[in-house]
Image (cartoon, rainbow, N blue to C red; front, side, top):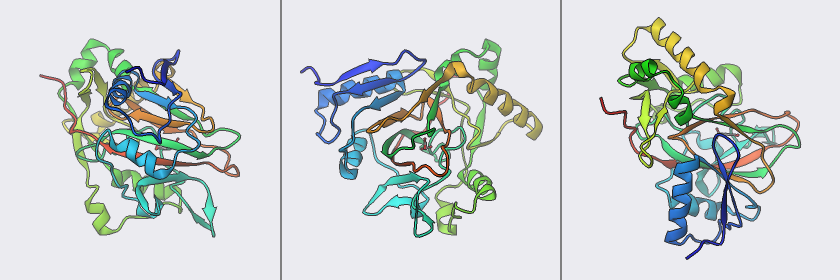
Length: 290
Ligand code: SIN
């Protein structure tokens, strides 16, 4: 059966838009297959015109790709739908309704978990008239562009990822970010992953360290680790690897955390911006064969 929607690749380093698609309608297996293949291939899919999408349908569509995570910041989960994290700069009765500073640093979602997220789906609810773009950097192209000697150096290395370190850094900048309870902290203990991971769908290699969550490279002394991470970070966030998403009313953006990092650029604080995010659990990252 030919799907009634169209997938149009962007004229960019990554990404495609999906038009004529209604996420409220359950997906046939052939359509799911088509979307999955496009997801592996383009790393970012922009589903247009999802203005009518309700939380239950957002969750049901996301669940086709795997089990959903419940974010550790419990205060910002949508009432009745804990699979949805609210990303927002809006306030009600003086309290933030969502995570205000979500993603204001380069990262791959939940890379601090033993099974990091394979993909996230962010649905626009209220958009600012100015700013609020999200940047996506392809870590496949970033890996491919490394000199062979650097690829060989990074191949056997592993790195620690820590939510607790990031949360502490964000809390030092803003009183709006809650601390975690001791029990919550136990669910996000630091974890170690390969610096290079192999994408299970395509076999392509990607850099898998980020400014946001990577604390250090396990096999190196502290100063060497810091210098190498700084060098990788400068490389992996070059303009040539980036697609800038300017949000349009109704957009739902689905990205592949195994292939891209992303960054929220922010918007003027007096302009409301609210989005809902589901996060799909992924596999344990696998490094390149020795
Ligand atoms: C996120 O990191 O999930 C938030 C991205 C955004 O608000 O643009």
